[in-house]
Length: 372
Image 1: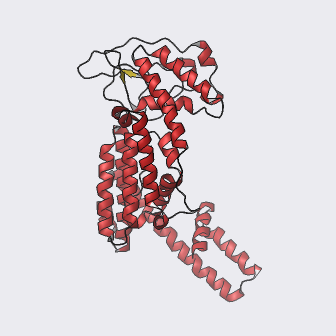
Image 2 (image 1 turned 120 degrees about the horizontal axis):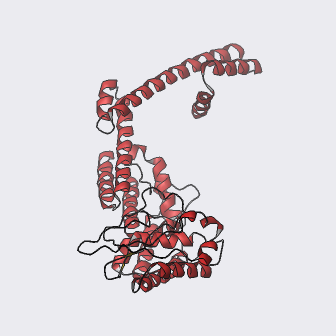
Image 3 (image 1 turned 60 degrees about the vertical axis):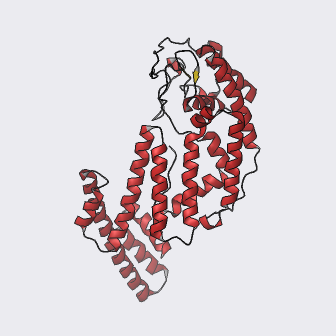
């Protein structure tokens, strides 16, 4: 699932660092390899998977390739395609052996191809073997798979799109990548370079695919890119107040989640946004001295009563840990004041740590000590 950056400007540094890397140094990989799982609405028949002895569990959110859906105002085609030819199935590269073909080939009642994101997943499934075997061999395998599982004219339509897809990927790989610093930050990111990169990719998409194919293959990626750019621009704009910045990001995030076609992914993104809000509001309320009851009431807007109770228990555990840390620091300072920074003092401090904290807590204590 594509990750959505936090929508809170005060807690957005780590997600934004990830976002910058995706936009700046990984934009080509995102557009080629990042696939948001879609369940097609206008579907009649899907391609059969590999034989059962080569199948494994499908990733979460993927419509199984053998599942049949219905197309509005069309009859359902339920005929099964022949199994994958023995020569093709047994010659799969090692990385694909024992896996189920990901993706689908959808046709309507007139045996016309219905282009979905599942078709691109099918292409990318086989193309993931690049490096293990020549591209020409992969191309032959994909074309053979399509023709074995798809009637005409849908088969030729799918083959044509696949060949255009290969040409498109080659063209994208030859684009100049935006230059980024080793450790980029929001203020240093050159948005104009990123926008030029995205524009160039979109021009290639328009050159090799019609509008319906572009929407099916790249629509969700474009929506995510638009959202990410809005987040970066808002965080770069020093003239915005925190409230104004938050409002812009919230609006963009709501629009992005609403644009996602996969209900499962949409639910996960909504849950992630709620967690971001819960964490941000919890931190703010704790800093303002809110009572536990007030914090619990806020949390109940986002999570179940059971989760609220678990979070309250976690709060109590964290408060107790903080008290022990404070007591440890007081005692360790007393040891250093009395003995000085000598080996004997360090031995007593280590013994104090072992007495007051578990091994896991000592790891946290070490991090806290280095930060102070």
